[in-house]
Amino acid sequence: GKMKVGDIAIEMGIKATQLIKALMTNGVMGNVNSDLDFDTIALIVPEFGWEAQNTFKTADEIVVETAFGNLEAELVIRPPVVTVMGHVDHGKTSLLDAIRNARVASGEAGGITQHIGAYSVTTEDGSLITFLDTPGHEAFTAMRARGANATDIAIIVVAADDGMMPQTAEAISHAKAAGVPIIVAVNKMDKPGANPDRIKQQLTELEIVPEEWGGSTIFCEVSALKRTGIPELLENIKLLAEVAELKANPEKSGSGLVIEAKLEKGKGPVATILVKDGHVNVGDYIVAGSMKGKVKSLTNDKGERVDTVTPGLPVEVLGLEGVPAAGDRFDVVVDERTAEEVVGVRKEQAMAENTQKKMSLEDMFSKVTQGDLKEFNIILKADVHGSLEAIQGMLNKMTSVEVKNKIVHAAVGGVTENDVMLAHTSKGVVIGFNVRPDNNAQAKAKQLGVDIRTYSIVYEMMDEIKKAMTGLLAPQV
Ligand code: GDP
Image (cartoon, helix red, strand yellow):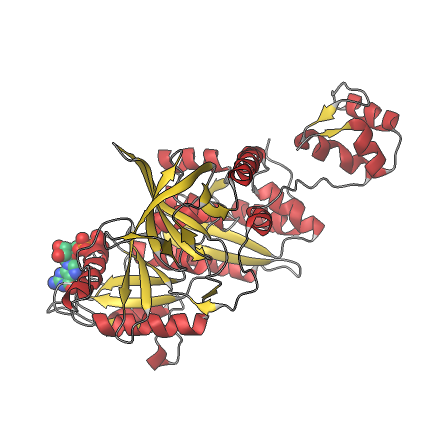
């Protein structure tokens, strides 16, 4: 991300001496050959009517370079990847177990499941559905924060006897922010106090409206404990996946993401990967995150050794030289030299990302002024319900010609790590009214460069947001 003074001057069509002078006025000493970092360049070029943009090779560009095989092959439907989310104790883990066991019950070969972080089941008509084994929106958003959207469909579990809870709403916000379609599983239908209609009513407030009420969300009534309603749930997932037309080319080199990875005694690095496109073979050269390796073995979720794995399926890989992180993307590459090259670029990217500018309220303003920001993403937290609703109302009204306010998530309570993650992935800011971030949230915000603004006076808050939206806010020093 560095550039020489001379090159920048040529780029802007000015004399190098003019630039050197401007730098000196800003306290930077240099000559024609001095290297300037991005922050300095960004600071100085507006004086000459230019704007600096930090661009890097994206991970996608690398794939374009590394993919091989039959790139023109006909696309085929791949299994959908499903994440289960919802409030604690509403039955996420039980539901995942029930689905997994439905496979055993149906007498499918290799019924004993290996816990590798994801598993797939066969529906009645023979199509496959893959489930991520780590329930909850924390894992979901942590992966998204690394740039990977593992999930095609989100199941929101709500206990029929308990109804909508804070984490239900949070999970829905996370799924919506990711643009992932939602199916609601109303669980614990076996309980005496089960009241699915109340849940439908409650979720309507979050614009999750059941199909039978004219909306577009499928609600499935299940009991993870009694194992009822599971085939219907799977059937509905399949239908939603068909609408989404998830396609992949199984004839090209594989790519996808790492679901989990660890170092195992006697085995070395063990990673579970989810193939989103292409295929992976034993013997392939592979790069996962910034770790490379040659695939020694592939083991599926039934504990069987396989030679190849196709799109939409998880598999455990041995042969990587190091342990990648969950959410890292992986690519099969043509040879070892390419693997090394990709590792080099990935490492550079990681460094660049660390120094990249954060999305603060000021950045939003400057983007507004430049006209590149159309939506102003806000995660709103407040101390009581009354003020939350009042502020939401005001924010919704405060939409300028250029920019639309978008409340990604609004809830009562302190600012948590999850709020920060959500702000990070939706490139927004966290706004707290009469609440403060806890220690974890503060640490996460610092690490990710997320802006948390807290206010105790409505007028001040609205004033700052309004200024932000019109591009007038002075940077916070
Ligand atoms: P999670 O925190 O969302 O993963 O919830 P769990 O799957 O751990 O379930 C929480 C509790 O609810 C456990 O005691 C389960 O046995 C119970 N539970 C889960 N599903 C059902 C169900 O369908 N009916 C009944 N009666 N209890 C359930």
